[in-house]
Length: 215
Image (cartoon, rainbow, N blue to C red; front, side, top):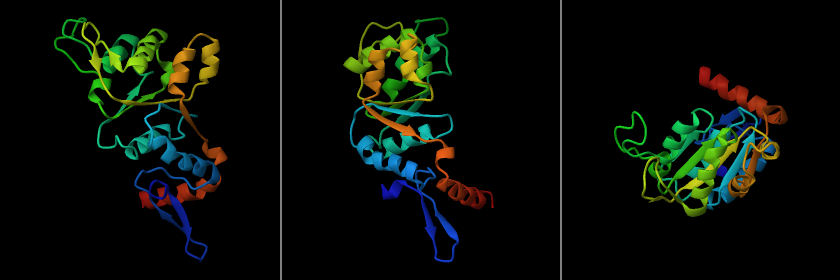
């Protein structure tokens, strides 16, 4: 974990020196060290990972660190925001479409799963994924195959899935807003990122980082 964590070093005079890490995640407090301790486990497996935490806690960055430290690092890392697109467009972005599948589909287009072959797909804001599309995602997780929108032939790909959300998925399951079976397929491994208010030791580190950056 040494090469992917930030350190706050005291030179003996009481002055703290920031040692920037290549991953760009700033943290040295006990709560964030627990997260860093999980990185080797999360990186050296193909199991799905669920990253939870409030908005702004660094879920995207942790997902990227996991990918970069995995055996898939030389292949694509593709991020898809499940809450940023309407259901029809999101399905096309994920699974691709064939020419003529809908108005404006003038050519075949590969989806993000196909483009990320051998790499990692990061599904951020998974709690915002439309319920009907969750069924197709679950089917893909079972078979690693899918049919592009408007297509007939199945496409097989090898990708690792990392998902993230700030929403309470268990509550969404109770409200029939999120599929329980999909939750457990994505929640094989789990890491929860603490908010900054629980990382008091990192405040000085972050101040030093931004002072150096803006100077």
